[in-house]
Every structure is written in structure tokens, then in C-alpha cells.
Length: 175
Image (cartoon, rainbow, N blue to C red):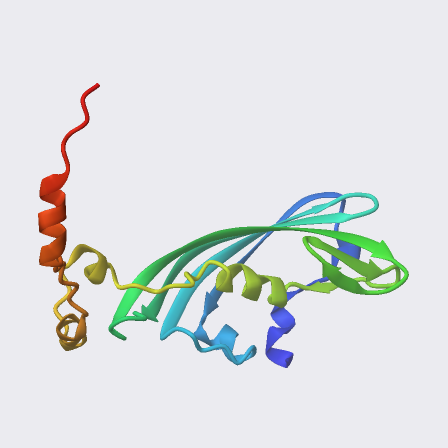
């Protein structure tokens, strides 16, 4: 993953305090992860790194949009993306990343590649159910939607005529 080298931050040379990094993320970034669940993407990821004496805090904030295909009609539409991720980097004997929101790096480590976390903050911003806004408000005209309406099961409320006779026997209760 030579192309992800630009996402490596050498934190040893940084002074204590806040440091800002900005990354412009497009389709090419996701080719490294073999992720193609959208047609195109254009995001800005702002990373605030706060270096403390014994740990590092990382705050990822993404804003942008992706062209997705609707799950119902397969029509493309633009989805706005906004998400945040906080990560605490501590130092220990070995590399451990199975704790949510905490990353433990070996004491000898001097740099951190944030590409995986940028990937996660963007993918988690994508909706799990992708519905074209035109489907929600009824403005989308699509052959697929028309076919779905044709195939929709019509529920008919047929009442057995015997129940009608029984309902006539009911008398309202007086209080």
C-alpha cells in the first residue's frame, strides 16, 4: 500500500499540543481497500491530532458526498456524508487495536498511518439502507417503481358475512 504513504504521520517530531491535517478523499483512496459500494465519492477529512506527554488524541471529522445506488430502484443519487470519530492512542508493550476507540502502539513506534481510520469514518457515514430521495417523496419516475407497485400485494378487507349478523347483536354498554 505504497499509495497510502501520504496518510502516515510521524508523531515523534511533533511538539505537544494541537496539530491539524486535512485530506481530500476521492475514489482512488478506496481502491486500496477494494471497496466499491458507491459510484463516486468526494470528501474532506479534517484530522485534529492532540499530542500529550503520554498519549495522543485523534479527532476525525468528515464532510462530503457520495453517489450511491438506491436499494429499491438502483437509480443513482447524491448522499451527503457527515461523521466524526475519536481515537485515543496509547503506548504499551505490543500493538493492540481490538479495543473500541483506543489504539495501543509499541513504545518504539514513531509514526502512525491513519488511512484505515479515514476509511472507517467515511464508510460508517454511509447509510445502511440507501433510498433515493425521490422514492421517499414520490417524485421519482422509474420503471422499477411502477413494476413494484404492480406486484404489490393488495390486502382486501373482506369480512365474513356471518360476523355482520353477530355484530348486530352487540349492544352498546351503558355506564
